Image 1 (tube, rainbow, N blue to C red):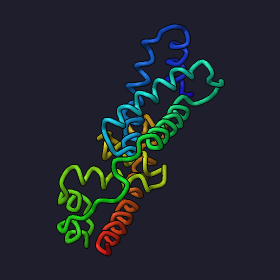
Image 2: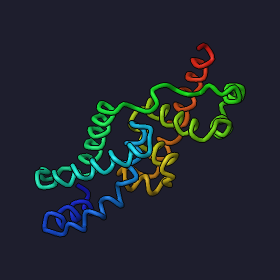
Image 3: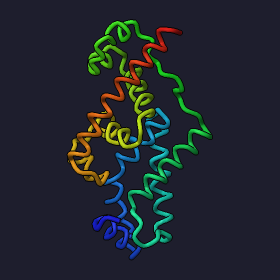
Image 4: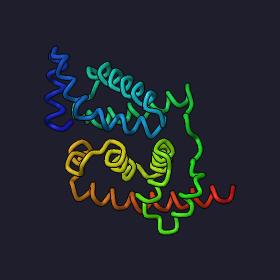
Length: 191
């Protein structure tokens, strides 16, 4: 556990249940972004976020010494999202890039132009679908930056990375995202 997280967990275990809100403020957007990437619906993501924090709270007493609260919380988020998808399904299984305008503009793959050419609901689903295909080292910073609107220093704080590592992940994620988007557009054109 980081010192700050460890101190907060100690307060919660000492009877200060209100201190748990500090952990929610710190990690709520991270959990929500991961949940949204897995479920693709805001209502489902809110439900998964609630379940994740409830499960993490219930498991605080059994946290082994030296265990990172952040790692346990993110593992719990993935479990809760998987359970939700298994029980309820995703609202979007396929990449929805059927827009002629998006295909026409995809030659240069200037990301804002391609995404801006799609209706907002489709653009959000495409973003979530493609981000879900990235390696976790890229997926989380990309989700936090592009879905949750977090800046590099804030992402670094909640992920435990340096700002340079976050910037590298965002740059690498952008390049992989563009490759995946191009592939999705090509597949949509063949259908």
